[in-house]
Structures are given as C-alpha cells and as structure tokens.
Amino acid sequence: QIIDGQGGTVAPALIELHAHLREPGQEVKEDLESGLAAAAAGGYGTVVSMPNTSPVVDDPATVRALIEKANRLGFARLRPAAALTRGQLGEQLAELATLKEAGAAMFTDDGRTNEDARVLRLGLEYAGSLGMVVSVHAEDASLRQGGVMNEGVVSEELGLPGNPGAAEAARVARDIEIAALTGARLHIQHLSTARALDLVREGKRRGVPVTCEVCPHHLTLTDEALRGFDAMYKVAPPLRTQVDADYLLQGLLDGTVDCLATDHAPHTRAEKEQDLLSAPFGIPSIEVAFPLLWTRFGEQLGLEKLLDLFTGGAARVMGWPEPGLEPGQPADLVVLDLNTERPVDPATFRSKAKFSPWAGQPLRGWPLLTLVNGQVAYQRQ
Ligand code: DOR
Ligand code: ZN
Ligand code: ZN
Image (cartoon, rainbow, N blue to C red; front, side, top):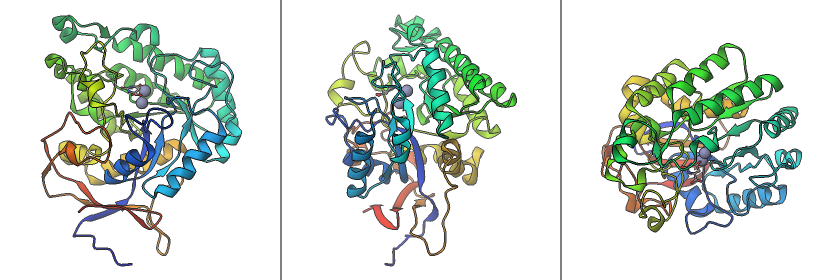
C-alpha cells in the first residue's frame, strides 16, 4: 500500500498518557469510538484512558474488554489505566498483577477524593513490585474543595471561590516523600504550579523516581480567562497565572517536565454551559494539542524536543520501548503538516465535545495521516 504523505513530516505516532474517554458509563460525553478517533486525528497512536468512569475501571475483565473493543475499532491503541484501589474511595487494592498482563498502566484520577497516604504507600509498593507506575492527580481534596478557579488576585476580584496552588504543592510534596520511602515509580499528572515544579525538580535531584507531565491548557491559558465567567475554562487543577505558565515552559526546556499530556476531559455542551459553580471540570484538547504547542512554542522548544515530549518522553515515563520507525515493521506514525495555517474548527472534531478554548485560532502542525500498526487510523480529507 502506497500512502501519499502529502509533503508532510514523518514522526512516530504521539503517545497520550492522560485522556478521559468516559467509557463505561458516561458515553453521552465521549466513548471509545469518538475518543480514539479524536486521538488518531490528533496524531496519537496510543492513549492511556483514565479510570474515573462509572463504574470505575478497577478489574481485569473491564480492562481486557476495553482493549478488545479498541482493537476492533482500529483508531489509536488503548492502554487503559486502572484504579489503584477497588472503586475511587476504595481501601482494597485492585488486582494489578492481572491488569498488567492485560497491558494496563495504573492510576487513580480522582480529583475530588484523596487516597489515604497509607493506601498510596501500599499501592506504590505493590505497583513497584510489578514494575508499574502509579500516576496521581496530586491535589489535596480538602484544600481544593469548593474552588472553581485558581485562588489569587483574579478570583478575589471576581468573588469566586478559589483552589489554591498549595493544594497541589502539598500533595506533590507528600507523594514524593512516599515515593522516596518505597522506591517505587510515581508520576505526577497535570502539574500546574511553579511551586510544585520546584518540588519535582528537587525530588529528581535527590534521586526519587518521580516524573511529571504538563497539559496544553496550563501552558497557553491563565486564570484571566475566567473573567468572562465561562465554565469552558473550568478545569482541575485550575488555570493558574502567567508566572506559572512561563515556569512550566522553562520546565519543558530544562527537562524537569518529562512529557506533555492533554487531560482531554470531554463533557456535554449543556453541562459546560451551566454557571461556573455547577459546571463540571475539564477541557477537551486531544485534537489540538500538537498544533497548539507547535504553533505557540515550536521556536523555543524546537521540533525534536517537542516531539520527544509527545512520544519518547511519555514512553520513558511508563517504561515502554522507545518509539521509533523500524524498517520492515508495521509502523505507528504520524505525518504532520508543520507549515500550513488552519483555524481550530470544533465542528470538525471527532470528539463528542465539539467546543474548544482555542476555537478560531490559526494553528500550524495539523496531522495529515496517522498510522497505527501500519493501518490508516486517520487521514485528513
Ligand atoms: O478537569 C478535570 N477533569 N480534572 C480532573 O481531574 C478530572 C477531569 C474529568 O474527569 O473530567
Ligand atoms: Zn486529574
Ligand atoms: Zn484527568
């Protein structure tokens, strides 16, 4: 089969460590078909889906069923993350050994709930013994409680309840200590503050096995976006300040940040059109992440570094083989059009969440073609 690359740039397919695909139970927001098609359109060949579904993904049978369904669909590959505990508030550890056989990463994207420090220690020890990584949402639930945006000058001006950066830093500090205690691998998701980045930097310097990811929205948007009281910008952890966003970019440049991940968090339009206090947290971004960051930061980061943050960096976090293009092997690859500017058009999204904070923005770096296991998973019309 000869595929017309249309003059684009070939790279290994992107790897997404953090997407909410909502299956099972919340298919009104997203499902495997729409979410994995969206991922392929975003240039991703592999997606780790979050287990905060209903029911929570915490058992081997569900993990296997999700993988089999994804394989039949033929879009991006799925590596479902499974909850560390049985249920999100659980105390009983899930059957990780079998989950690993099924090819799962593991995690608890709770947001509203915190695992007890002791349960995190047990989970890290268990996961560590299996060579698995524990990813954590890393916000102190009680400090964060009630906050709809970053706590600071803007939230005070607007009279809105804030979620302080301390909720993140406190959890990151705690979890790094527990990782150091156990020697097991800890991955901090969607790191959003300068303070927490310093804690990760210091942890790494001490030799603690800790990694972290940052998201497109925390790099490109700030709490100023909440001035219009639009719940599209309501996300957890919240959009912070320009100082934080600049600091995160420095973290990408100096290697403290291991990879980019989207935290693609689809909700229905009706849910997101509610008032700020009622609307759910989350921003969909899996179809725009690469073009957005290439357009905004391509010059500072360079193509090689940016691609590594979307591919090899993510693989190293998980302990997966280095992504590459091997002669004679079926490829996971993406062909990127690095030069043509096109506006973000949410109406064309494969995701069910057809809205975007970046709607209308002219971006470069759109995928032309995504191959997964040598098969076409996405081709631009
Ligand atoms: O903004 C968020 N959305 N943060 C989370 O932690 C959860 C996620 C979701 O599931 O929608
Ligand atoms: Zn989270
Ligand atoms: Zn998430």
